[in-house]
View 1 (cartoon, rainbow, N blue to C red):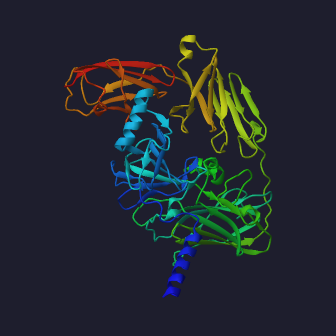
View 2 (view 1 turned 180 degrees about the horizontal axis):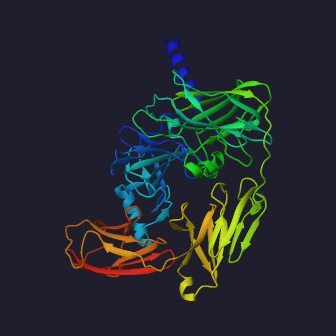
View 3 (view 1 turned 90 degrees about the vertical axis):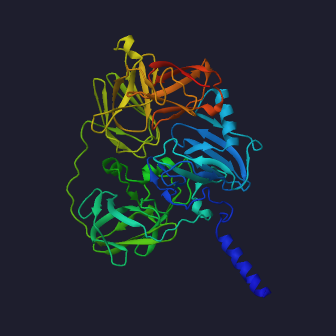
Length: 562
């Protein structure tokens, strides 16, 4: 019996030692079945997703529990991004993050509101001391919501290490039922060297794939020569959700030898922008689909990519036969394999047409200034990942700076000289990006210094001057001027600005600042009378709203409460 017990404990110890992450330390932040709308490290706009998006049945208000004991180390409230977010640091060194919250638990809510009223701001960031907001395991800390940049009610949940690197929470023992293999949607080939080609093509080529009766995949046979690489569009689905999520692990093989691994278990926030180097950025601009390139291009620092041979690229010689294989796993080790038979066949290629004469050549490791008429563009060193040739045209007040098919690592400065405009108009001008089809102008954060407007942006595209000569609009939602609202808990106001957008707002009642939470999705300001700021019967509400170019509207009304 003792021998059996010793063997059992040894096995348990060995299994625990296999994982560097504690398996029974963190508990679920919700008391409902965990169903995901977003998985860890799946591909998002300009970043990898840093946590799990847990569905809340299309509703807000579910109790959110601390996943382990600790203390609230950070609180951030923003009208964008994570909305209302809590960060709890735990004794084992990890930090859990809970985002898009509707509201905090009473003791945290009181702490936050005290600071909001002290600083007279809705949006803030706080770093409580360890002894200020201690939290027990499974203590209710908040309620789920839909605040910030959320696309619908859910809880965004993260686990970060001591270096603030997000780690897949499923590595800590969170169990999401998944019995379905990942799906391979599309396959692409990339000729990568001079003289290389796939099926006679010298640029990206789509390769037909076939799903086999056993659930695996095979492509049509391709002909190729020279250095080539492959890219794939693939997703995964959990059992209780119909949405398409990201995968967990990709391995490629060339003639049986491992070529490249992509492991999505952890990344750093410094790396996340380089997702744009990992995907086919030009194809994403064209289709809004993300091809994952299974080879490592120059200046790609992503640590989730591990090369075993030639940066994941393969070399095909004439008159040879080879097999390239892609294995795609989800977290539960459901796997889909895709085999690609390759016949080496060298072909004579047509001459490559030279770049158009009007393209400007940008050397990536040098600073570049592009200038014409009243517009200049400052491109800083290492803004691009590689040397590029881009179109630069200026017509009146419109800049055509290629199409956004090349990703940038850094922002560039776009400058417009507005000295030719009337002084009365200068304060209402801004730089805007023109939509792809030219039917809409989007405000780009713009600074004015003398007669120069400057916008910082990471996107190529078309830019022009816009003018915002309209004041923001303000109107009441749930009451009218002079009405009694004694039975109301909330005071609601709608604010909007159709051109440059809302920059800030300020609300007072009888001259005293009041907290009004701003929901950008509904354009609603909301005051909670439970704040107990309002004690008078007659109340004069005054709201000042300012847009991004400085136009402001002052709104005043009166209501009564007992």
